[in-house]
Image 1 (spheres, helix red, strand yellow):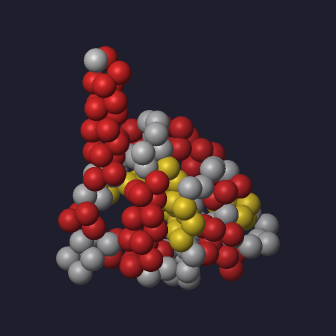
Image 2 (cartoon, helix red, strand yellow):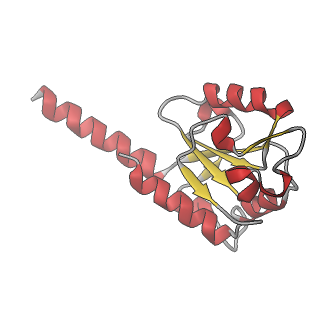
Length: 147
């Protein structure tokens, strides 16, 4: 009986995580092209809130960390600190070619590269800037993997 109840509670929690993920956006130092596309997700045209996705301002309440821009030496420690403040389970999404690989800023004296050099990344969404439809598709793929 106790195993059945534990399994049912686990199923309900997993369902809630898939149906209402809270995202936190962090720009680690790019051109803001991807940031504008992420903000476009919240407008009535794309309206990701209808999918249950909410943009959160506090890392302590977020489930998914969306990173844009290449990681710079200056933003590396702040990015790690924000990642550590997000409660488990947590996921990281790299949005844009700068966040995936360093993009056009790769090779700069202050650029460490993509987010994977600092944090474990679950989903990569390439593009410069990537379209809102691609971001929605990437988030949908991530939500399918949540168990």
